[in-house]
Length: 275
Image (cartoon, rainbow, N blue to C red):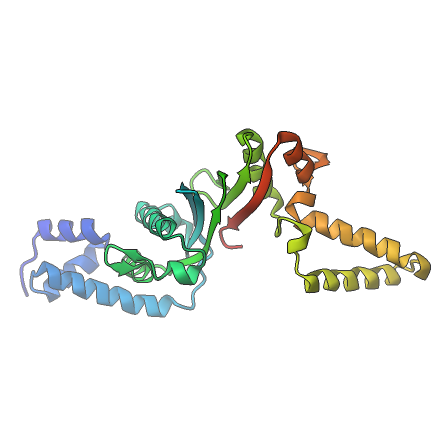
């Protein structure tokens, strides 16, 4: 068995972030050859990735950046909060975000194909997961175009990186109100910007549900159309951003707040880790 120096172990650990025991064993198996030891550690990690494929990745972080008339938001997931706050995991997220933003990817499928230093994002994640020892996945990607943007990243715990991320695309000069609307979105979790974006089948299903509820409550048949319409409108106020009551003043809708500020919201994205 080859003698393994502390210096070589230190070099590999700094490069890969592997544990002391695994690094020493790989160097011994490689008879001191650093390149061969790296290959051994990568292969071992890749086997571990396959075993972790069915495990749940419910922790992680969100990250966002504005770049050349676009704003990109990603969610990178892992298994534990210990890894979520690890410097290597955070650096991986930053690297992925920069590459995906530069490429203008709008879906996870496209983002995974983006090149990072000669490797795809997918392979880069796989390699890092092998080293870190947890399942890691790029879960969500959104890229918005617009005149201006507000990015709001919210920490649900001071010890962890941001867990909720919002990007708002807008036109107008009132950045403060646009940021306030981004904060509202982080809390209120709208699903659509306008009523027109809500799929017709979703509206029809909601209409069927509230009609059945109203009948079960014994509401007069003649009054049902008005009652149902009111409840469908209440549904819109839950899921449509511009219809939602403003978190800072529920007497105002987001549409009213935006109009009063002279801004127009053209799009938004919101990710919450694990949601």
